[in-house]
Amino acid sequence: MNAAVTATRSATALDIAAIRRDFPILHQTVNGKPLVYLDNAASSQRPKSVIEAISRYYEHDHANVHRGVHTLSQRATDAYEGARETIRRFINARDTKEIVFVRGTTEAVNLVAQSFARPGFQAGDEILISALEHHANIVPWQLLRDQVGAVLKVIPINEAGEVDFVEFQKLIGPRTRLLALAHVSNALGTIVPVEKFIKVAKQHGVPVLLDGAQAIPHTAVDVQALGCDFYCFSSHKMLGPTGMGVLYGKRELLEAMPPWQGGGDMILSVTFEKTTFNQLPWKFEAGTPHIAGAIGLATAIDYLETIGMQRIAAYENELLEYATERLSALPGLRIVGTAADKAAVVSFTLDGIHPHDIGTILDTEGVAIRTGHHCAMPVMDFFRVPATARASMSFYNTREEIDRLVAALEHTRQVLG
Image 1: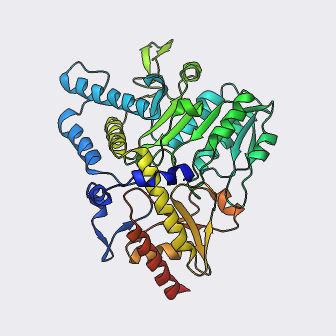
Image 2: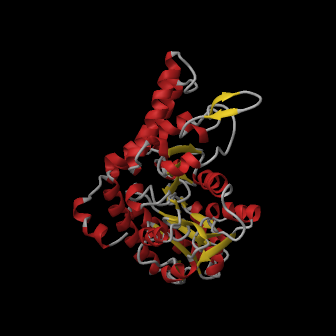
């Protein structure tokens, strides 16, 4: 990711063979070939410990939380709220009341748009996003724009796929009410130097939301050090179950925000005349929650911490450098997104071959990558391509798998080139 990470390589050796034994899904064949899974930016795989924790909960502890006085309910509640504390510690939030459970990054962004922004934003108020964003950090702000008459302004990117900091400084101003940025681009792997953007935003008194879905699986995140007001991420991209995510918000902001959804568990009392809402964080968690999802996410965090986020970042940077070198040597291959600071993602095109066809041929070789616009159509428009092929790596991938990718791409050129 950067020189400091690269410099620590000697101290970051991972036992990749042992790690891979922890992931049952990796040990299978696809179309008669050993699976090479390089679609981690879309969704990572799960270690046995996560699968077993979820199974153990359903086999021994399942009951609804917060409501029951019986033993199973108390055990389920302890595990569910214990997961909240694990997450608080992992991102260094001040208080578990700042950890709101949601379905994923998308729901977290929508919650902020509808509960934080919509009640107070007025016509002419400005929201700043970048041209690098996932649709989940574009569409909620467009909906808000149409609801209240706000103005959506877009910070441009350059040909390397980096957000233009100079233009950002020109765009932010007295009408700016929110800055919403991806921490890491899902389409290109660009690591945005969010600390610089947050510093300027704070000088203008502008709150900051970070989409951390692609950052948190790969590097240590400290929300207090970052100074952001909201941080959103999804469980399924960091070894946990699907349908589970987290919104971190500063307590003083969450306290002032009205509930987004109404129902059970987000109330203290209800009459036909009035409802008294629950305290944080439960006032944002209407209905029976994804209990197993929280438990699985906490177990995934335990697994990541056992390996060490710095070691993961350093190893994935080695994979990125190797993949970039090997892929760059292929005739007709163009890497899309060449930022100086990147996560382990390589998006590319092959001359004369549509990315969907690349993905189809690679699948016949047992190699799983993502093809398409990656829910980032404005990024594709900027680079004047309909889609890209994207190989995204995790710490359980190997150089040998990258060699398999390269060989499969050479086969693709022979078949379709």
